[in-house]
Amino acid sequence: MRTGNPVLKNDTFQRSRDEGSSMTLNGTVAKISLLFLFLIGTAGYTWYQYAQGVDVTIMMLAGAIGGLIFALITVFIPKAAPITAPIYAALEGFFIGGISAFAESSYSGIVIQAVSLTLAVMGALLLLYATRVIKVTRNFRLMIVSATLGIFLVYMVNIVLNLFGMQVPYLHSSGPVGIGISLFIVAIAALNLVLDFDFIEQGVNRGAPKHMEWYGAFGLIVTLVWLYIEILRLLQKLRR
Image (cartoon, rainbow, N blue to C red; front, side):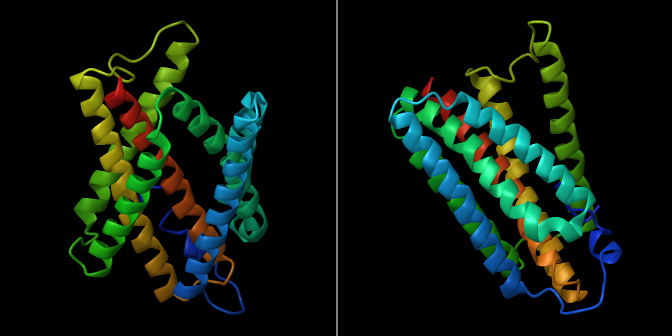
């Protein structure tokens, strides 16, 4: 239970040890930057297509479903991360680009606000973690893991209820309770970044194999995408 991120588990590095060069922090940062570029590239392309009047719904669905498939492959086969992680990032970009374009069409300027807040939150938490203002203790980890699991279960219940024309009360509401729920989810998503930073640091300290740089970068991008989506949803509620 090293991290609340479902794609990063405490025993992943131990199970993935092999011969060869070891994971480094600089190498992981480089991989994170590369995956981020893939994500932004395809998101920008989808945005451009939407601006040209193209229906990007198919691109969004393909990105969401394809991203999920390659995420699962990466989780179960970490050694494939050098190949599957970039594909995941590119596919997720199609999805992010689509929902961002739709949100921007309804609320002008909301995307730049969401992007700025996401990057600011990540930067602030990285600074707090690096200076050890925030320390990843056992209780801290258990709290974030439990909250993340709870959010996941609520979303799964909501998906099932949607099949019958219903939804979890207040989850999508723009009233005070709905906004409060979104604030809580954003906070948990943000704190998962701290656990991911710790997970990557532990992997470097343990001398994990080189391909785990890609896997660690993949896990951080997963959390970053989740955080961005939740911040975007929160801003939409506030605009309404």
